[in-house]
Image (cartoon, rainbow, N blue to C red; front, top):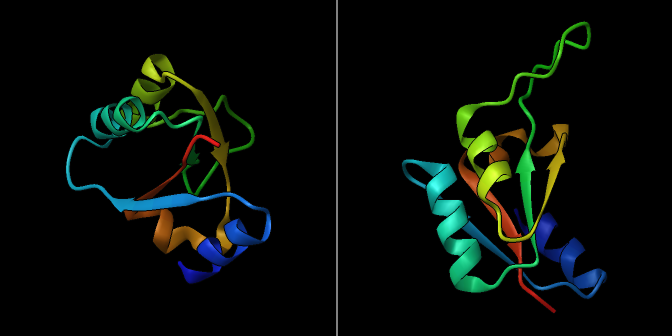
Length: 93
């Protein structure tokens, strides 16, 4: 987690890392609206079947349909443990 914060500082971006408990889609949208975030970064599922259409979890679909800002879907194999329970939301510049 410290690596993510350090990388963000190197490119001049302030980030907020928050742990979500339940209903992550709704919590992400609420926090994005309240915080005026300009970008929401979400993890793609760890295992992706490249022979089929990508099936996203319901909470990710909820965020995509309700986000007040851009949403970036990422695969970051080195941070799987972090992505499962945390969300990174860069603050508006």
